[in-house]
Image (cartoon, rainbow, N blue to C red; front, side):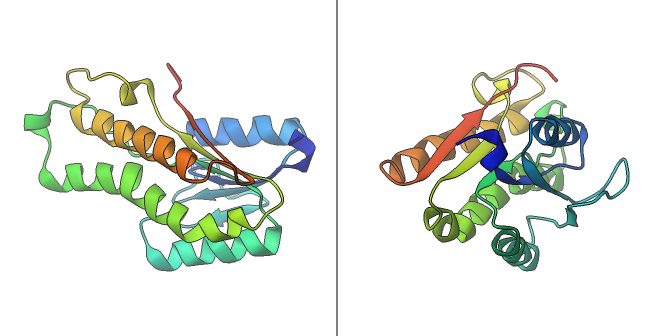
Length: 174
């Protein structure tokens, strides 16, 4: 698929990595709708405020996808918590796993029929090098990205032979 044919829903686009991705995609000719829970640089054109941990917000994003003829979804939403496990509260653990793993899985499940109905579609998960190696102080974050990586691999095999391409990208440093 040519970049000019990409109509992208960029989930997690209000942060540093997401903002940079949105800018890079747009500069190459892609149409981008940016989704974020919070906006560091203010809301811009083609932006949506949504929290993918909430079922109503996920349903709203599916409506946005239909309205905007989205054919590429980039899951870049993430919550970091870099500290030793014994210093983390249970709620912090829950939040990291919910934002980084469970919510992307749920959103993927809900948008999968729509993406499979497109002529060409892509679903891209943005992980981390910490999804490939365990390091002290990154146990929960690493586990969430490790799980996302496994999910993306399995989903890629589930949809093999269809019009949907599933990718997992793991930046080394940002």
